Image 1 (tube, helix red, strand yellow):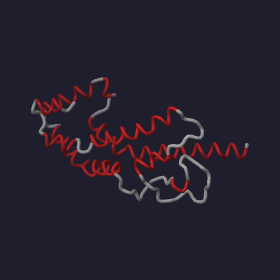
Image 2 (cartoon, one colour; image 1 turned 180 degrees about the vertical axis):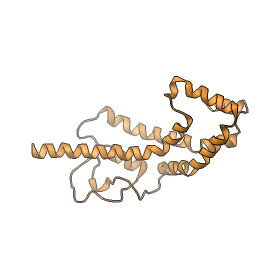
Image 3 (cartoon, rainbow, N blue to C red; image 1 turned 60 degrees about the vertical axis):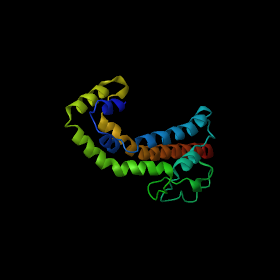
Length: 173
């Protein structure tokens, strides 16, 4: 997709490297994550667990531990499942996101500069108008890796709350 930009000398390799710094690493990291999740999702049942995959891939730990709850929720042991709001431990997966986030302001600056290039604007407009772009702009796409981790947090919180509701329903009804 980006090859034509280089081949037609619309954008320099340096600008592309700044604009899409770490995107390929994030892509490969998420493919690995998906490869681990898919087999579980295909055989999903009420006793299925995914927390260990998150811990393996990200090894984030929440600031707080879910007090004294001893239920077997989402993860093998609840005391391992922290809703990682802060105190992230750096793993390769998290490192690729960190690098992307640290470069984000530079990428936005490079994009702003590139938007002065009419050939670049025409190329991006063409790509953005295609059906496969899902009406997303380049700005929308560049922010996605930054939004991904908070989405994981929200998804795990929902899973946790659903598990709690299920347990309460079993206990009280």
